[in-house]
Length: 158
Image 1 (cartoon, one colour):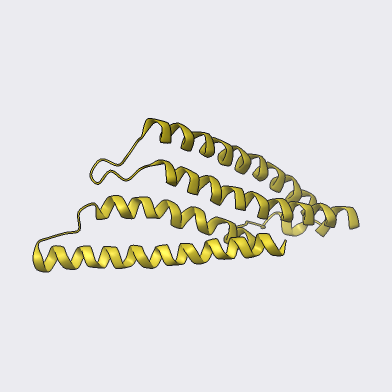
Image 2: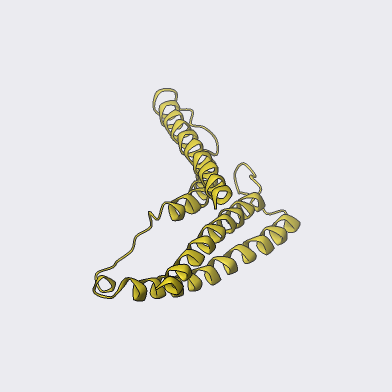
């Protein structure tokens, strides 16, 4: 669990760096556009591409910190064991979904790389961002897997 937690934290720090880079790019683009009538070519495409990295590199850390939204209005009336069973079942369903997303993005990345698909203005290759999605989801899967194991442990212990 420590290695998975460390990996998700490193990816989150990378996401923070990406957010800072996006901020600098956007401020620079606005400044250059306003004062010199010379915007940065492709700033929107770069920002869109970096947004993928920002979102998917932060997912695993959010899950590791259990910072995702959870509505427990109804579940709070049940016993802790029933809550653990529910959490384990929803966690298993989530694992299946994240595994499918990870697998499909790896296969899509390979296909897009072979097709050489790029962005329209400055020709940013699309395939690395599919790998980013797959990597982010793979680490999310590991975090969720450890959490499901913990919930199953709670169910067994009673």
